[in-house]
Image (cartoon, rainbow over all chains, first blue to last red; front, side, top):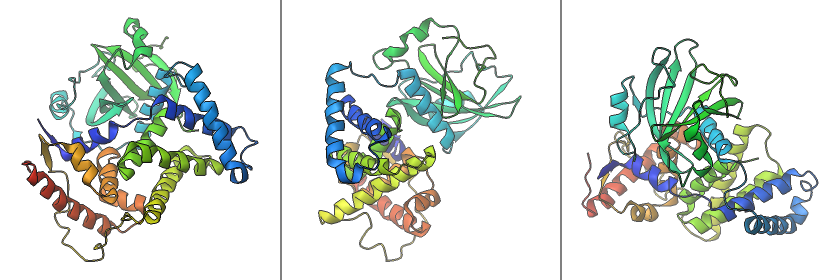
Length: 213
Length: 158
């Protein structure tokens, strides 16, 4: 199977992820630093504070089930919002979904058009490879014809093991809504894929219906 | 406060610099400790600040270990950068992980910004605070080097 250098590099880099213990250590460092009393003492007591943070992290690691911290919907919303804000260049520019699908052929799934975005209102602009929670994904940029707003639509294979916290989404008729970085993110499962889309309006789902959890 | 996905993103950057997971975590942990002493309030600035710390700390570590720093020794010599692009390189049937580990940190860093962050040469130059011509020189040399590595493994170049 041939792939571009860009794809090879992206897959190589994105194969790396902090394990739960490492993440807990870094989270504990941040919580310790954010507690206020520690900021001035970092320089003098940095080693002691770091040791305490590590001890706390280990405690968390052994006492709390793996994968806790931010709930998965919040993590996904944050990652999606972060990527949307950066508005990285599109790798393929086309309004034709077949062309996007052909370009994104290296994904382990075939991107599909979602029933929640009415083509009458949403214009597809293009796409690029990306990832969600470390899994390869498609980032498709769409424009709301009514408002001119740009949205980032993400799709990835709904892996029950990886997205276990979202299994309830398969039963929901409307998206789960979360706030992240000053914008709304709707998350849903459709046709065996996990979808997420950014939106400016925090109270209305992309299909125009109020979201429910 | 950096979220888990933020930290994963910075960790991947560290992996690109160091070439291995253990050093990457050490780099991220020490960089985060520095960042937390005086974190910018703005989210985007906080990310840029941490990225800058990680970059500079890695250079310091390389110097301390007397390893090759991020800049190439022959960078001062001008090269023809007319074909300085990586877009048309195709990898086929190659153990890319091996190629990745054999690259220099400076090469992996440029590839990271280009392929993962989607930066142009101008944006990479801005990020690394170097002239765009220097980035293009590195890309040109990187292209030659990759072609050599791919060629040895029977790779196809479009």
